[in-house]
Amino acid sequence: MKEHLPTHVAFIMDGNGRWAQKRGLARLKGHAQGIETVRTVCEELSKLGVEYATFYTFSTENWKRPWEEVGGLFTLMRTYFKNEMKQIMDKNLRVLFIGDHSETSKLPADILTLMTDVETQTKDNTGLTITFAINYSGRDELLRAATKLVQQSAATGEAVTPEMMAAALDTAGIPDPDFIIRTSGEQRISNFLLWQLAYAELYFSDVAWPDFTATHLQAALSSYMSRNRRFGAVPQVSAA
Ligand code: FPP
Image (cartoon, rainbow, N blue to C red; front, side, top):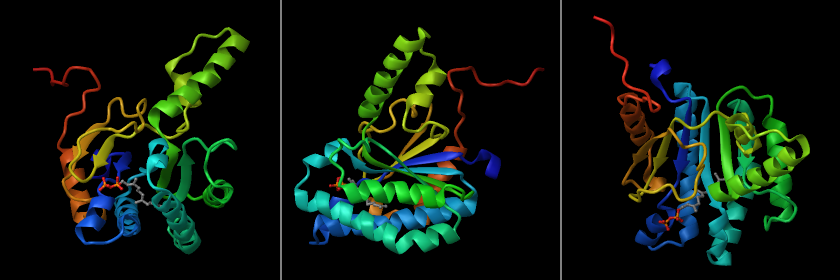
């Protein structure tokens, strides 16, 4: 079964707010419950032997939300990494972060430090690689990469190749996602991994992220495994 599994699964964890509102709870409770789903999904992917998972955690557009929610999300991140480091190390998980993490970004200084610390602590782990996209959007990443490449090209005179582009992205060294799962019924990409998703298989689930279970994940992976990926080529036919 492992050879048919995706190497890299990306997630748009949608529906936390609606999940909470439906229950008369603050939206933040939906995000807190969403963290439980991140745990479940990582555990299941590790068990199956999937190598990479990427989670759209905080987009560059999410700053438009009320400060109570934005600040609450950072508090959840602090608590998650404070409580979870032992388990992350025990489970041999490598954690990476993508997005604009420059000094001039609006991210709180302690979140910038936390991300560096977590990456350093987990860098030699050899199990599932989990990437959290924080202060991330695909267009922002492409613009930052293009800026680097323009400078590089001006200095060397070299033409930009697809390999140079991939190496200039935040995801340098991480294979492109084979499969992307978005929960909660919306069917769009929302500025996520725009370069990297070029050939990814898409899967949309009606289930809200906090309700997404290992069984839902298994159903999604079964759908992936039944598909025929052609990458723009014609299907393989055996010679008569
Ligand atoms: C989208 O749901 C979800 C987010 C913008 C945030 C997702 C973040 C988490 C689950 C917290 C994860 C943190 C760690 C450290 C793992 P939404 O709020 O847009 O939902 P809605 O469309 O129902 O309003």
